[in-house]
Amino acid sequence: MLVKTKTSKTTQGNKALKTMAVECVLATSRQNNRIASHRKRITKRQGKMKGRIASAHLLLTITYNILKTGEPYHELGSNHLEEKHNNKEIKMIEYLKKKGYTIAPSEQQTA
Image 1 (tube, one colour):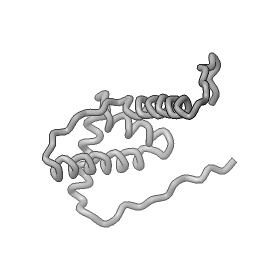
Image 2: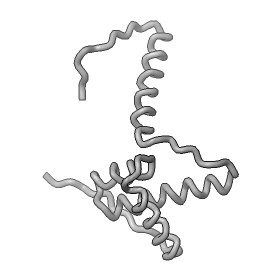
Image 3: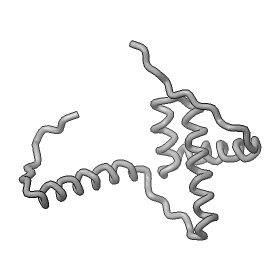
Image 4: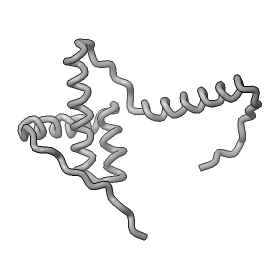
């Protein structure tokens, strides 16, 4: 079975900034935060280097937004995506109930 990998190239930019961002990402590897969990999640699917660069991009995006808005950073937590997914399911169930459907929780979870 052939698996297609997502190819990507980084654009020409400041090499020192990229190096610093990747070093900062690697410094968070043993912490329990959003950036470390993002790197682990990407690394599982696409490999070490893509995980590092993707997390460095996330870190730079967070930094840019902090500088742009002037608001302090609030850590969302390592399980932010799981909570977001659960909230989405709850909102869907509430929406269906408003439409008149009855939803009963099942004992068996599906994939």
